[in-house]
Image (cartoon, rainbow, N blue to C red; front, side):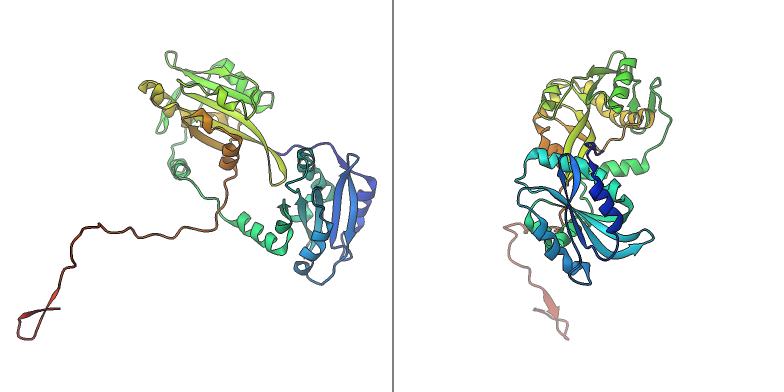
Length: 351
């Protein structure tokens, strides 16, 4: 979810929003000055088609290292008036604080202007992305389907065929996916705090002898400390609220991590953690109301880097599918076989 900064539009900008909805305005530049959303500049159309105006009007308004917002009027209309495109400029060489400030204020700008009239959004970090060709490339990438890994495809197939059953924290159910041990009161209380943003990390463990899922840790954790929370000789379930930015938005993504350090665990422990994982996730979603944006399994704590989590949550879309390469035959399979054809007299002759 995105978080806002409390920065609001000043009176001049609000007044301008009330009168800029007609054909006289094509593009509006908005910046953050003195902790206010302010009108920087605006321009009317240069032609009768927005596609022709896109590059010629947007690029001159961009500064090399200063983020900004640009509202660009399209030619399509609905009952509320003209449709608009929100262009967020966040150059790579701008200060991190500026990037975060603009990312966190974008939702406020959309509400002040009227989110219903913004039909499209573009996020650019380089001048190349602000061109018309850059816009078309961004649009193609956004519309392309997200590739699934083999594990994700298998999980999707399981979800399509799984048996649904009522799951409670005080009961133990056996399903086609495994067995669910009940959560202890401490674990349940910690998960509720996690849901309410009072905790950003919860670690759960299975008490094998008691057949319950117990709370292991609620230490305040950032991305750099996350690998330190993973035990080297025991399996664990981890829930982590991962703060990051993506395409100009500040996000906090709930990540479920199942850590299994290979053969350092006993066979019984590996089987129990594997069998409890899917029913536990179902219980967390249905009983506690957690919405997990990504579920992943690791066997080594060093995998948990910020880049790894970002790629798992926002995988890079590829528009190029690799061509099938026919494998080569065995190197020593002998000479080609000669085929023989029969003549009209019934005798065989070499073809």
